[in-house]
Amino acid sequence: MAKKNFCRDRMMKTWSKINYTLGMVLVSAVLGCNKENVSKNSAILLGADYRMCACCGGWFIEIVHDTLRFDNQPSNSDVDLNTAEFPLKVDVKWKKKETACMSDLIEVTSLKKR
Image (cartoon, rainbow, N blue to C red; front, side, top):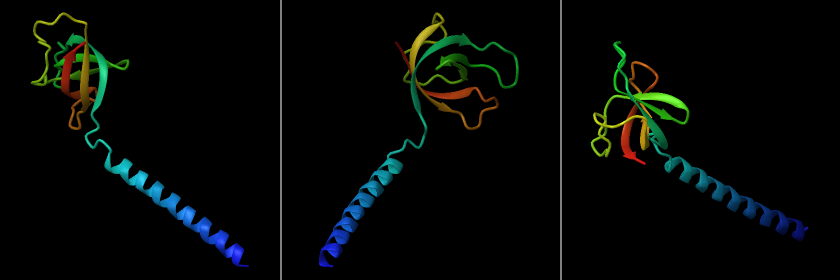
């Protein structure tokens, strides 16, 4: 009978260690998440948005086969959008704009030539 209790106790300690480890991994994953949901991608600047509507304007950019728009160039950018020849390959850090008038508008936080 003592041997059964020993095995059960040992198994319970092992499961406790496993549960503790899984719990710590889960906590680390939750705390390590990027709360701003900023993505980094290779992209292609396509040019200016010359449409004349209330929610238009800015520049078109193709990111992972989606054509999106941004309206403000980040200050740390090495791209001059007024003199650039399009299409232009770039690396971009961006996130969806929460208060966008149209769903294709993003906020660009970094824009660098490739």
